[in-house]
Length: 247
Image (tube, rainbow, N blue to C red; front, side, top):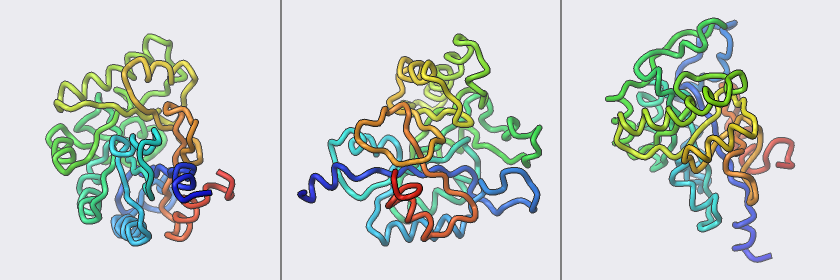
């Protein structure tokens, strides 16, 4: 098989981050979703040294469509935390990487109140001015619904309003196109994928484990979650070989 064919067939990993921050005290729910700034910096530096290019969902599109090939991976941040701007953006710029931050439009400038009942600490989300700084840094904005809802608990009209409304809110506030969507909690049904496509999104990312391969529906994109305790070797192994070496 030629190198070109191998490149075309190579799966594309899409990484999922949440907060880039020091972890809260032991016993705090979901503290694993906090990756320290130093760990994030080392991860990105390692991947660049290995010849990878980190790309936003917008920049990844030609690779997902097979129009370009290369050693690339996607970088996504769920929820729109201010610490993404504070700690992740400088690292992305230093490595010439881009990323997509999925924003909850109805909670811009507030906190992660959807987590409050389960004991997750409240931290700031980016406001409009800060989101503009993210964009000015060459980064991409995506949609994460208006209120970080459980789509499978809503009726179709409510679900579509959350999906499409977030895109409309962000485009109006920021003056940019918002073309990429992420299902909150990773919960979705086929009808929600159809709603995302109808709303005008080009891709929708999930929490399903795996890497993108040609033929995968762009509204069912799997990702690789980067948790606090993952080693750089472990991260590379998942990117290069998938979960269990078979995806």
